[in-house]
Image (cartoon, rainbow, N blue to C red):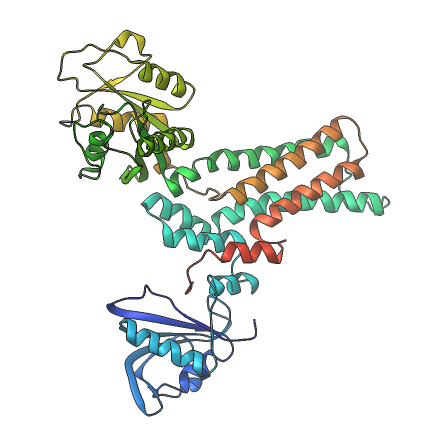
Amino acid sequence: MTDTICAISTPLGEGAIAIIRLSGKEAISLVSSIFTKDLTKVPSHTIHYGYIKYKNEIIDEVLVSVMRAPKTFTTEDVVEINTHGGIAITNKILEILLTIGARLAEPGEFTKRAFLNGRIDLVESEAVSDLITADTDNARKMAINQVTGTLSKLITNEREKLAYLLSNIEVNIDYPEYEDVEVVTHKTLLPKLEEVKENLNTILKESKTSKIIKDGLNICIVGRPNVGKSSLLNRFLNENKAIVTNIAGTTRDIVEGSIVIDGIKLNFIDTAGIRNTTDVVEKIGVDKSLEAINKADLVILVLNSNEKLTKEDKDLLEKIKDLTHIIFVNKNDLQTKLELEHLPSYIEGNTNSEDGINALKKEILKIFNLGKIESKNLAYMSNARQIALVEKAINYINNSIISLNDETPIDLAEIDIKNAWNALGEIIGATYSEELIDELFKNFCLGK
């Protein structure tokens, strides 16, 4: 990390301004060499007006921010050039910077440097990306809690408790004559490990909500052809997203759309009508529909009120019975022929109007308890890596508790305690591999 990196930090295109960021020991001198003012002598955290000039040509009128190490995001010298927002101007200045000695930053390299330089931990690093891509206010709140270290503190607190136990065990083993340290026994260790386990389980339980907050709920709308699936999707989205006709098999592929209710993103998936068909293209759509059912967080099965249950309806009822689902009986404005007594529960409505739509939304909120998410502190883990490591730590602690209950020597139980301590360290980046870091940051945008 001895070189100076640069990248465009704003979306490329026409706009009022664009920002080009540099970080590294030569960031200030490089920009100063093409700026109409000597930036090497200006105070830190100041903004300067002038022109970018290269080979006697004025490239653009700009504002340049100078921030000196170590009080910067990367802890290195950082310069940001605010140019007029335009593709030609922005690319030209970037090209000049690369010509005079800067290197194009890799995706996420600014944040990677902040992590490697100790400015932020790994949880905070991952949260930067989540904050940028947040689609809802709750997702933003969750990401900002991680950026500001709320989740890291929860993990660090439990890790410190394990470190205290480990240090006492080591002293007891190596220096049994030392009297100022608490004597560690099976009885004294067990309640402290149970406490850490309980706290980690609480974090894990609350973090199950994080997928909903971050990615939203995937809701699959299924049913036979012409029962009103596409009309239901259009009602939810308040737009004509899916084509609606009275011709069976109109929808042959997945149609998607999203809305936000109570701060949670709902991703609706309208599927092809499920039926036996000899049409090759329609059959591909039916197969995709069946796949979508298994991947969905919630399935909405649409049935026709004015038709008796068919074999396809019964097959679908059987398929979704063990999945989280809602049955929506459509076309309640027509004569009822459907055997409602055969349905465990259902909501009636009509996609030609708003009838039943609000009831569906309320049922979705009720099933996933979405109304209570707003009141929590949103200090959740946001990805599978973090959750898997907490589960790993809990398993190690469980193993240690079992060993202690079996009167296994403490120095053997200590191995699992140390493994749990290391697993929690991987969450915040106290321990990590180069491969892990490269994998995490490669999905960031270029200028971050």
